Length: 370
Image 1 (spheres, rainbow, N blue to C red):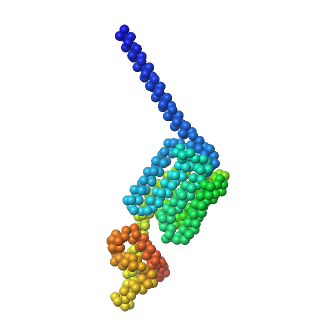
Image 2 (spheres, rainbow, N blue to C red):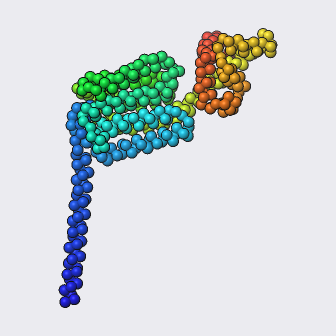
Image 3 (cartoon, helix red, strand yellow):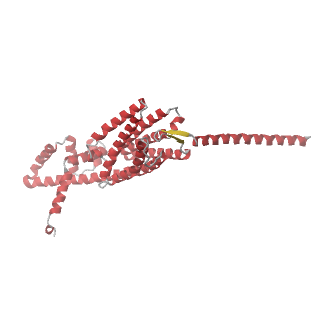
């Protein structure tokens, strides 16, 4: 009797175990089915105007995770190096993430949206992303110094692109969507063209052109040519993402390289400025001795219309003081001193004077140096 009871208990345990395993298997099957359903889900592509399978979840998670890491890295570098370019670049990457989040159809997992809303939202993100990329390009390439009139062309274009994107929200006409994308793309291409012109002169411009060329080509194909029905490269968002990942890695290093190059360039400019001042001071001493030095400085101030801060900065530079000491004396930051030094360098036309000296040396007969 006792043996029969034990057999019954063991049989009950076996049955319970089988039931638990069956429940676990069903739950696993449901989870796997849910994942499979997500991977096989269909989304509407607003630019290809087709319904296609959703991107692979593993690749999407890898892309967004790595992009988030790059954004955090740029934020850390911004606080460590105090370089605003890291901030501008980080914001432009964040805008790109929002754009792809919408283009991949992932937004529909959180809010219900129609095809019209998705297209209008994507157009807005394209405009914002390209605008922030243009802002970063302007700061990174020092457009204000090299091409000061370019902003007068790009700012009205961007405002018009924003207007077209706003109208796209109110109408079903895709013409405004294409027009907004075209204008936004024209703004970015303007700065990319400036980078190409600076390519032979500045090494940091080479990083910019190399890293932006492929993503810009893919973006043109996907956001401009595809809506017009032009099959050029048949680009998908996956192609743009891969190119964008390479761009993020290159440009994060390029900003650091540029920062070092700018500091070396400023050091050379300060040295040339000191030589310029010493030369003028020597000419005055030869003519009217020490007394004429003050007269020369007054003429220099009047001729170039220098303000009080520029006069003090010029004095400290002539004395050979370092930027950190000058910043403490003028109650400002070292970054601001670098910007003021650069402006003063161009204002005094020292670069032209140095080039004239080089030309004079090149035109001298060889026997003078033999």
